[in-house]
Length: 384
Image (cartoon, rainbow, N blue to C red; front, side, top):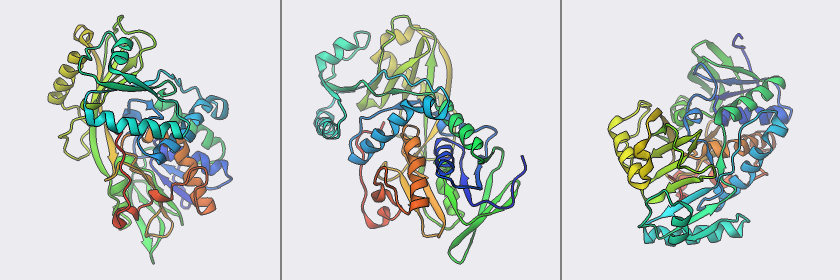
C-alpha cells in the first residue's frame, strides 16, 4: 500500500500502544488515521519480545486502576475484537525474601484490597507448600492474585490492527519515521523512509524509541531503553499445569509455563541503557544459575530459544500520557516494562484525550510529561 500524502492523525509505532490507539480512535469515529511501523511486521518491537504477563498486583493506585480497566478488556477481547489471545489466568505469585519487601508488600496488598483486587497474603510456609518443586527456604512471605496471568502479545496487536483496518485505518509496515515537521510550535507532519506525510496531529507510541522520536520535534522525553532477556526450556514434566507466574522479587527472577516447559527471565541490575537487543550470554549464565538454584529441575532441561527486548523506563517507572509543548504532538509511552498489559486501556485513554480533551475512563492527568520538571513523580515499587 502506498504512503498517503496527508492524514488527520499519524500514530508512530505498531506495537500494542499504537495498535490500540488506532483502534480506539477509529471506534470513536476518527477518520483518516495512519499507523506507521518501521519493522517488517507489527508488534515485533518491545511488545513482541515481552513475557506476556498481565497483573493487578501493583504498588500505586494509578497502576492498579489501569489494570482494573485493561485486564477486563483482555478478558472480553475475543468477543469484542474477534481475535483469540489465549488469556490464561494462572495467577502471579510474588515470593519475598527481604524484610523491607515484606513491609512494602503489606502496604501494597492493603491498597489493592481497597480498590477491589483480591490479592492473597501468603506466609513463607504457604509459598513453599504451593511450590514444592522450588527451593524457597529463605522466603518470608508472598502474594498471589488468581486473576493475574498470561496473554498472547501477537494476538492482541493483530486483533487491534485487523479491527482498525476494517474501520478504515491505514496501517503500514517497513516505514521508518526519520523526522518530524514542526512549524510555529505546531506539528505539521512526519518525514519517513518512504516520503513525507502532512498531519496536524501525531502520536508518539514508539515504546523504547519514543524518546528518539520526540527529540525530532525538539521535545525531551525522559525514556531510557533497558535490555531485558528471556529463555525457554524443553519440557519439564514436574511442572504442574496450574503453575503460576512466579517472581522471586529480590532477584527480579521469574518463571512461567511456556508449552510443556518454562519461560525464565531475570533483570540485570547493571544493564547499561541502549538499544542492543542481542542476548548477553554472560548474563544468561547468571540467570540460568539463579534459576537452577531456585528450581533444581531446570538443570535437567534444555534450552529451546532465547531473546532480548527493551523496557522503556521513566524516572518513576510510570507511563507518560498526553500533549507535549509542541501543539498536536502527543505521547503514550514509558510504561517501564508493563506496557503490554496496559495497552488496551492506554489506547482508549489516548482517544479520549485527543477527542474529548481529557481522559475519563481513568484519570491519568498526573501522568503528564510536565511532572518530571515539576517534581511530581509517582514511584512504583513493584517493577521487575
